[in-house]
Length: 364
Image 1: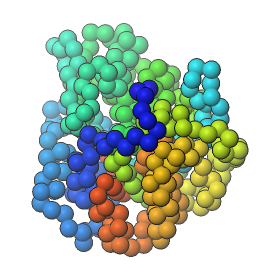
Image 2: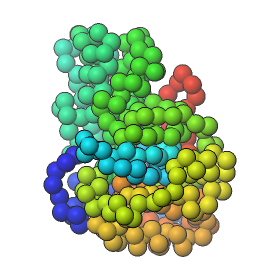
Image 3: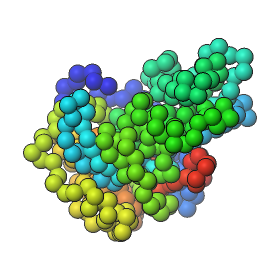
Image 4: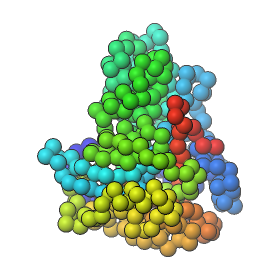
């Protein structure tokens, strides 16, 4: 994660080609928020080649071959305050996280006769060795519960892009922890999973919440809050160009950090909700360094702010995804301008949550 990169590195993601296809073929996928939302897209042409690519990518797994098939949602940060740099080099932050119904699928099977995990992933460039967060999550649950001789077959079907600020990999790890615990007979409580998850990464803890949480520390200290309403419309616009989180932090100008108390921001969202909270509640201290590294990202945000129907527009996490609360009044015009633009991908979604005791459900 700390590979030295130049601030304005514009490396194309390895899977850029796939995502450019998916941006046009999105309405054919089962991960869509709901049928009514997608009806807005039905007048747009989807080539048979793109539809076939989407189908091949996302329908090759026979779920009957697995014990569990878990939806792995991604997240947006409704506000993100950077509080201070810590002596260990990390940063203390305060952020309101929200899961959305755009994500990956993790298929798991307990392999009784196996002596090692078997891990597959559809996306090129995703490591399938022990460096992958899914395998590390399985290892963690095994070691913590005294089940070192139990192994799994895992198949991760990804569509959440990397370097997006959406927490795709962290969500995968949380789903793996939950799934392994289920298949082992629930030897750990949810509280224990939450406690252990911080060892894997900062955002993983959040994905063990019910969908809305206030996170502090490195992000691993989670305070459950009232859930924001499911169904709140959100549109993710993701350029193919990515930025690494460490590089964004290295470009951070501490003199430009917001001075707004994050507790006040939290109070605003809890009282008014995501739609009625004012634009001044949507604060992301990482926009400045990300936009300094990629000025075109700031220009994209300004373009999206002018779209009629979007209530709020902000970058998620360390980028490079921009999320838009609401939906365009004119989907045809929106998709003509943004959906067909080369190097840009559009993913419609909604806020989603899970009920206590069960995992997140894929939205149909």
